[in-house]
Length: 311
Image (cartoon, rainbow, N blue to C red; front, side):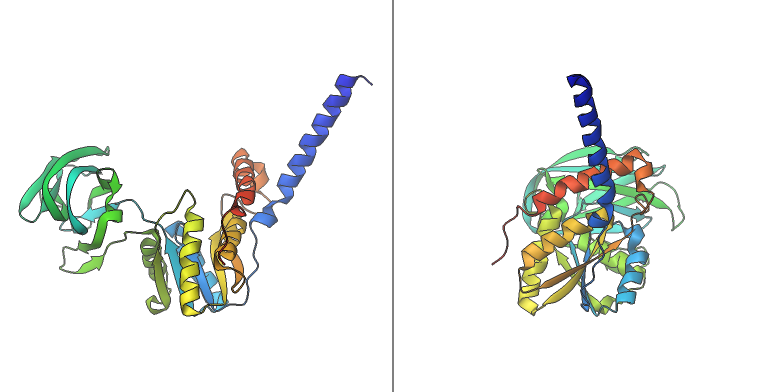
């Protein structure tokens, strides 16, 4: 046996062993180990389409208190005829306003500050940036679609992808966001993923009165760690000593590590994961995307231990 052939055998064996380790890592990542707690934390970054599954899990677990964490989301809203998004800023501001929007035929985007027209521009089905200089101090901005005809009330006329002042997400600058509907009603906006997920979870059937929203300021590059720190502060304030984290798919392991580290030894942290339909148990390995996602998540586990624990 030549040296080259031996090296080939070693490499093939190593690759096979690595593939086996990755293949067996799925249940390690998509872990389900509830603690028996009656308090749960839902990670707000979970796609709203899975909120019926989350609601069923919460009901099955008999949870009495639900916390929802989430970092700021883009200033993203879909508006119908007669709708207006009203943004009250934390303080009067000047600077460059950039709005990315698209919409229906014969529709214009109108942005007002009080009675002053900031921007009025026609929309197309392709979203693109529009820039205006806010020369005077602006305390409030109003975004509304204006249609040339008489559209049906259910038509979605305007989609706002994002809005920023001097590069900063408008949701990070707001004091309050309210949506004024055409029927005269007013509903709160969703500045954070905690807000958006709470509304989706309520729509799925979770009682509003048991939900507490925990909007989170993004710290560093990890939203999971930022959310975990936010809940840890709440746990210390309210005396929570046992909690289950509701995460998604193979991210469950990293979520549990983050919350356990943030909360410290005084809090028992369980974990439950909503199944990812793209990575089903026993079938995920049949696609290259499945392997890539598992490899990426597995590689991220060690970094979850590198954060500074709470004393």
